[in-house]
Image (cartoon, rainbow, N blue to C red; front, side, top):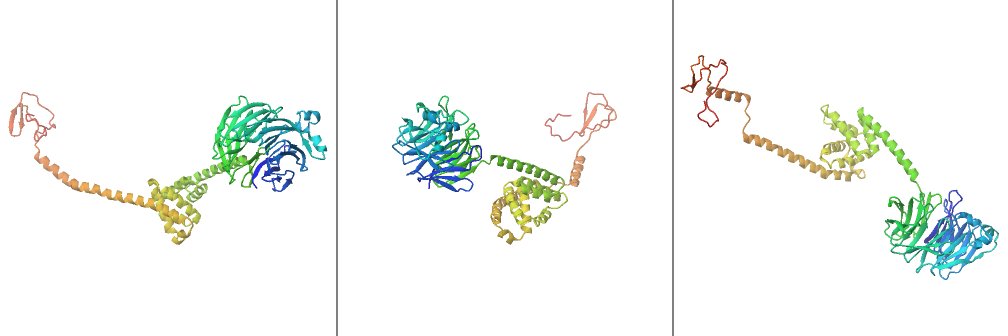
Length: 538
């Protein structure tokens, strides 16, 4: 059966243990949330469409296609009162929210000072029915006929939902005419009309912590309205189909909504963002309710599923904190192992932490320590590979596949792959689930790196060709011979012993005007071949 509506029964400060559920039948089921055993409330003659539970948890109000409203006592599972007066099926019902009013009896209760129930019907009317009070219900032996206290034509189209404010001062109704109307609870006088939705309104709920009301509509949005100036203060968009139900939680700081897309969404009012999405239903989620302590959320829908959701925020935060502490401790141990060159332990810690970067750092340190000893590092890797279980080999090969995509890490990645392939039999690798696919992912980048090395090796021959084209490089003996030849061909001019104002240039005598003698005989002037274009230089 499709679940049309549900409510969690409050348990006077204790954890809620029961939920009332209306399905597409004339019976109402009371489920025990621990075992999901149920009791049946029988009395309606047609499908029950809606129900509500009193804040004290003692009474349940139900309505349906038989055009009646029934009040049930949860302890005895019997019907206390029946309200008749609507001309069409009744699709919405709500009980007053002040628990103390259910103790009011007598004339005060008849005049509206006690508890009450309001109903909305397909005949587009809203009716209020006053209740006689707990003492009268306790003494009654037969069903009490409830009388209409006041009635009004509420909307121009079908009314989908009716809700009572926490202080019993206002009543809100949502209709297919795209509006939400607020009524005085005492006389059903219209207080305000909230307009803004583009399609019919399926749900409206008052906040117990602030003067706001939340509405869910067929236009796939959830809106928040201020009761001070009746303006829309927030709009939440995210459902891909009609938003059918909405509830406040976390002290009025968050909203939870259910939609025809089968999704339940958690919204933070301050940030206007969807914090989480819960996918547990395969069809429309018609029913949604939150326990009084805010720890349980129950949903039901057209897929006939009744799901209980528990708030695990505290457990998740504790688990996250414990995980962070564990990771910090493991990282410290990893750093200590690397400092003391305990590479096997360091590798195990890095793999346990699932940190590829740390694994790369450990393997790099291991290979570099071998290279400093004049080895290639392959032998030490092969020794370690032989001690690894196949799960660790698969994990490291997965990391090698990622490392191999970058050129600077490709050498180490291929060295590790070589050590694994040469140390573990090929039939073991091929029979391990997932390893052939990992190796197939390594191959394309390995081929690319090999092609790059081939190009570099081929380009290296360009240097040899260039040097060969320039001629062979002369050795030191050839250079000394050339210098000796140049020295023999060059002529040196030494200063004369006596200053006769002459200098010898080549084989000619050139007379000068100076009579000074240069006493520094070590100065040598070479006059011969010159790059200068001035032929008159002396």
